[in-house]
Image (tube, rainbow over all chains, first blue to last red; front, side, top):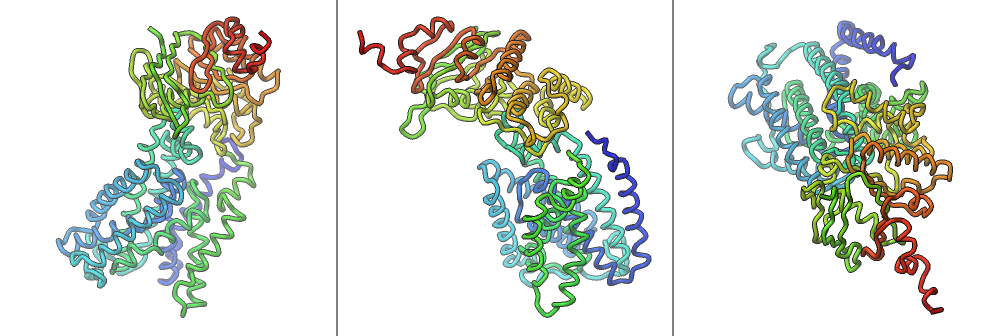
Length: 322
Length: 243
């Protein structure tokens, strides 16, 4: 099934890309490193989303929920209790996973599909945003400013951007590995079956509820880890930059552009969109939100001309079938 | 003890009685044909037995165990597999993967053993050469084949086939009849919905006739073909007017 000539070279491509990404920051100034950190961060978040949305076909419009939970958990633990954000990151992941399982169970148990599931997840993200806006514990609209302690690994703080670059690169290597594992496993096959036809999947003995909840739990856990990174990189969080709708959109647009349900789709999508939104921001800097309009336009083009994303386009070119 | 027993089954959709007080027993090793005019409740019965619908009342007993109201994937694991009248292949997956998805829960063993089992089924159905084709690229005959293959992969003891011959030409039908008979020889019990009378008469050891959700006749193909009620349902009342 996988004996295509190009496939044999894929390890070479992957290795070369990784090598290139590893040495890249040495030649880049702080500005370009920053851009690449954002590309990698959203590639990571998109990959987390992709497990539920891409492989499982359950289109979450509210992944900002999990990003925000990761960011708030580690930040609150760090600022109020002095707990290292690395530990906070894992605790945030667990909390996010519990919330993910709750949301998933409620939605899937009552058969919410397609746009209805999307709307429900959007509603949950908004609930968290409004809560964070009004609860003193989360700093209300003022948000939380992370005290800068200089370069310190336990505090997840670095003065040089290059450290963040390598951390988020490692996150990406990790999630590519996880996605590969899922794709090759029974879980991967089951998620694709659920995406294609849920009744047929049930008839073949698949507990569709269980596997959908499993997908959202993995996805929400991984997304929250990215949330902690996000907070530690920005040194500041508030309800809107964490739970805001724009984040949910930023997260899912990359895998859609790159290729839903593919290992490298989110990364490719991010590699294309990152510079594009940066350029628009530069050119039309005065108008905030211009890059989101651009995203909208890109989405329309992709849905019409590249329904399977960039990866799907290339797979078609080389005649690959999964 | 019958393999499958349906006792006093009732199901209505709004005011429409789809299944009305149905009793049915299927013995192990049988091929039972299920016929009846459109809307007689044949597919509804399949949906009830396979767990896609919950009955309003009545019991479904499989090998002595009450399976009424269980979810489809649980029913599947008990050993009942079904095909759909409107076939549901996973369009973007290859034939191979389509079948493999059914094969997992039976053998909790390694991927190698599962893949081997899938190959066996592909060979058995004559789909081996098409194992890399996508579900969406298959002909209708191959899709019906694939539908059967996936159901087989779950390792069923009782197989419910919903118009598996529909849309096939006579040569393809012949092949399918052959396949179904071989499955039966291998020990699988079959309940088959079919509209093609020639096929169902030659295939079934016993036939059950439904009309408006009620069983109006049951017996060997010859008995059923001679049954006045059945003739009336299929051909109308004309015969009696002359008397």
